[in-house]
Amino acid sequence: MARITIMGPSGRQERQLFRHNSLGRHPRNTHQVLDRVVSKEHCHIELVDEDYVLKDLGSLNGTYVNGDRVVDHHTLQPGDEITIGSTRIVFEPDEGRGEVTFDRLLSEEPREATQRFKIGDSDASHLIRAKVSVLAEKTFFAEELIQDDASLRRDYEKLRASHEVSRAIELGTSITALCGKILEVAFRLVPADRGVVLLHNDQGHLEPVAVRTSEESDGNGEVIVSRTVLDAVVREKEAILSHDASADARFQSAQSVIMQGIRSTMCVPLLHDDTVVGVMMLDSKLATHAFDEKDLALFETVASQAAIAIQNTLFAKRLEQEAVMRERFRRLLSPDIAEQVMSGKLEVKKGGELRETTVLFADIRGFTSMSESYKPQIVVDALNEYFERMVEIVFRYEGTLDKFIGDEMMVLFGAPVAHPDDPIRAAKAALEMQRALGAINERHASQSIPPFEIGIGINTGEVVAGYIGSSQALEYTVIGDPVNTGSRLCALAKPGEVLLTEGTAAKLGNKFDLEERPPEHVKGKAQPIRVFHLVGRAKRR
Image (cartoon, rainbow, N blue to C red):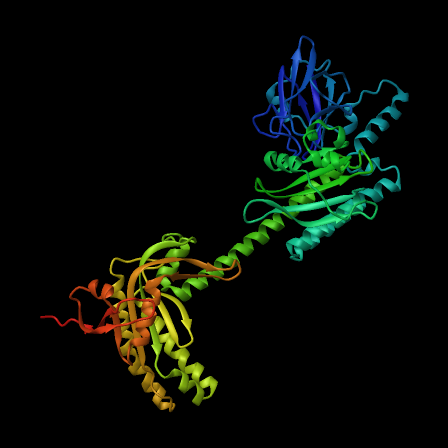
C-alpha cells in the first residue's frame, strides 16, 4: 500500500491510501481537505493494477503534479508533489508497513517533516534540506529551518500587514476604509498592478467599493473585472489563483482578461458562514507567477477577517434601519399594532396598493392669528400638548397618524392595518378628540392662552396606499380623491363640528346621531356632495 502526506491550512496529516480515494473539501470524501481553494470534490486517486493514478474531477483551480497541471490523468511516482489549491500532498509508497487498520490510522500521531524522507547515507542530508526548502517556499518557515534573514523578514512583514488589517477591523473602520486598507496591504506584499474589492449591493449585484492601481500600471486607473472569474468565485465559493491567465483554460471565455493582457491573477471570496459577501481581486500585467500559494493563503485569511467585519457592519446597519423603522411605526401606529408589524404578524406592503380607507382631518381654528400674538415657545408648547393628547386618542382606536401639516393632522383608519369597523373607529375618535379639548383648554386658560377649537372632516373611499418619496426619505401615506375630499370637508367644518361624507355616514349604521346639512360644493367635484354633521353616539332606546 501507499500513503500521502497532506500539508494544508489545517496542518500536516499522513493518510493511508485505499484502492479508491477521493480528495476534496466536502466531508463525504475519503480524505477531506479543509482548504477553501479546493473544490468540494477535487480529485481522485485510484489503484489501477499496481499503480496509483491521479485524476482531476473538473475542479475550479485544477490539480497539479510537480508544477504541471493534470489534464487527463497522471500515474503517480514516489516523491510526486500534488498541489490542490493551497494544499500540497506528497505521494510515497508504504513498503514494509503491512496492512494498516482503521483504528491504527485514527490513533497514529502526526510525524515530523523529516520522517517523510529515507536517508540511505550521510550524503543525503542536502537532499532533505532541498526538499524542505521547496516546501517552505510556499509556507511560513519553521524556526529550525530558517537559514537567512531575508526569508524571516518576508514572513514577518506579511504577519505585520495582516495584523494591520486586524487592527482596522477592531477599531471599527468603515467598510470602504477597511476595503481600502486591504488593498493597501496587498500592494505592499505582492507585485500587483491592480486590485479591486467588490461587495454585494441591496439588489445582490457586485459593485466596487475600493479600487487601487500601481504607479507602473498603464491606463487611466480604470479596472475592468472579468465577469467570468467573478461568477466562478461566487458560485463555487472558492479562490482562484492563476500564474498565467492568458494561457489558462479557465479564462478562455473571459475577454476582459485577454484584452487587458492580464498575466497573473488572484481572486478571493469574502466568505462568512458560507455566505459570499464580496470578492477581492488582484492581478498583474507584468509577470507570470506574480502570486504564489502562500500569498493566496494569507489573503484568504485577511478576506475571512474582512468578511466577518463587513457582515457585522451590515448587520448593525440593518439593526439601525429596523430601529428607525420601529420608531417610525411607533410614531404612526399604536404601540400594539407597531409591534405586530415589526414582528411580521401584520404585513405592511412596501409597494402601492388599492384599499378602502377612512381619512380624518383635524384642524385648529384661528391658530395662525394666535401664533402671531404669542411667543414661539408658548405656541410650540401648547401645540405639542394638543397633538400629544390627540395622537393618544387616535392610537386608542388603532388609527394611523399619517402626518402633521402645520396645526392640522391627517389620520388613517384602514391603512396600513385594516379593521372591519374603521369608519366607526374614526367617528368615535373624532368625538373623543372634541371632548378632550375641554381639559386642554383649562390648562391653557391658566397660562392666559386662548382656547383651541377644531374642525374635523371624515371621508371614506378607495385610495392608493404605500411608501412614497426618495430612497433616503420614504413615507407611508395614501393618495387619491377621497383624501382631497376629506381635506375639503375639514375646511368646511365650523369650530367644534365633525362633518362626514355620505359614504362614511352610510357605514355608521344607527350607532350615531347624524344631521344632514345642505349639499356643499367642494373643489374637484362637478356636483355638490351630501354632508352630514356627526352629533354624537346614538342614545339607547
